[in-house]
Length: 307
Image: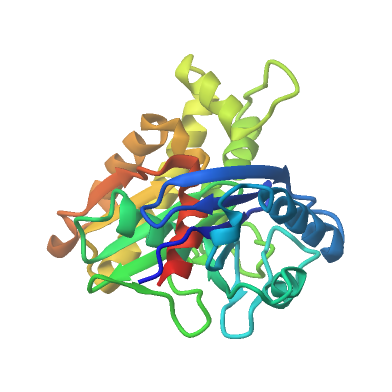
């Protein structure tokens, strides 16, 4: 069995992280760059490749056995392409071919969606380890998910199974960049929380109008900020309950930047879940914050490449 480290890439709408991950899930090295999400595809690729080039200076890089790429979706793992909703410069972008070419074909490159990546990480090393049937989610700039069913990752034909961020939880909701209406991502992502708080009258103390700033205000008792997190928790509860009803889950594990708000998000989520998860076989659903924190995407991309 191969035991060398795996190079990992985590591509999101806000940042591109690159790391080197040991076979036991230990993150040996990491570097991060802002995602130039509004730029052309080649500029986005350059940020990724610059991260890999920096990582190549690590002493253990020479022993790397693969590269795992976890990306915001949709992805097409069969074709090796990505079309992240929040990175418009990448549509059908051949990220696997371009990364493999940059590395001279020396390493196999494995693509997975970011939701599948967090599922791989948390099932192999984190909060989902005790469960055979779990939904693992990323709630950050976007909302993604991955499923573990029958003890194994369930990725689907193109690698997009479990993409919960783009199921509709509001039939007459606002238009999503994906083309649908009322997507979970439009209600529960970090930008959605900030937008809703602003619409309710919250005003940031400075230039920071992020979900993290809303969380600070919510902890101080700001009613609009609290209501924005409550709305996000309710939307997540609706999506999670629908998924649990469909495939009979034992647990849901939630990571990503928004999940760092802790009980500001999880308390209303659990409360609303008690209403939405109404059928008896959904009542036992456990809700956990991801154990691997902000590194789950990187560790999961590596875990998916480890096989």
